[in-house]
Image (cartoon, rainbow, N blue to C red; front, top):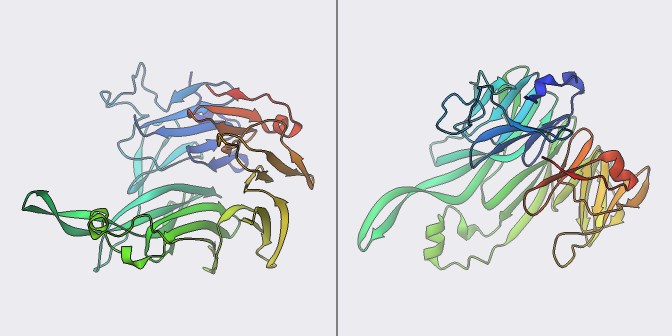
Length: 367
């Protein structure tokens, strides 16, 4: 029995399409790719059925079967189902195939960073956003250089090794127009990470963390080790950014962004959620919490973790009133009708959003 999302009755402009840490969702179907076997699968939450995106009869979905349409000989950093087709963000290309996985072909070559000064190794990050027939993704541009390795006493070999210094380019790709572009490029940072957080009508939000110690710049891990630099002396900085994708306006905030909803950005300061209206430049404290997230256009607040780091008190803002969740259910991502949580063993559990808000624990294991 196939559950390919092309079978859904939802029209494309009304479908719930959202990327997440595992891949993406289409209405109440989770689309994932597993790095260990490189298999793309669809999991229907309501039926619990999970099937590889393969149409070959009696296929074992192993590397021995060259005709398996669920396997991809590349990394699938992003998966989005759109207009009865599956789009796959690979290391250097974007692929398009039928929802069943068949008829896969390359439709776009991702422009990689090049210049005369440095050699780069570029590859996508796993943070991908989707909005209005477009995906937005990040390419990590790692500076490489030639170094000498001592592979035996007094024997050296010249190799190309990665440094700890990167820049980041934010890309967009339009499924309708089959057109991509680079919309922003950062400076170079060492021991850094850029994470896309949210996209609204005209703005994309992201967090950027990096080491402010410039002595690490352009050094490989081997060079850092041999230099005697204290590897625990990282001067970590964390900023959040808002980029207007229409005008190019860029604003940086000297704090870590927790969540975005409409015109509001949410930060944690001194154990409190601070709501910042970036259109009117107004801030106000809305609740005491250690962390904030937005799901289903609802603000969630999380208290302190217990000693096991497996549970905490959860509150949500509904109808302008803060309410405490009636049971433990840490939300990792959402589908159209469900919140989904993952336990320490990577098992997924789902609960209807309406039941969650009502305090009725009807959560169940998926699959």
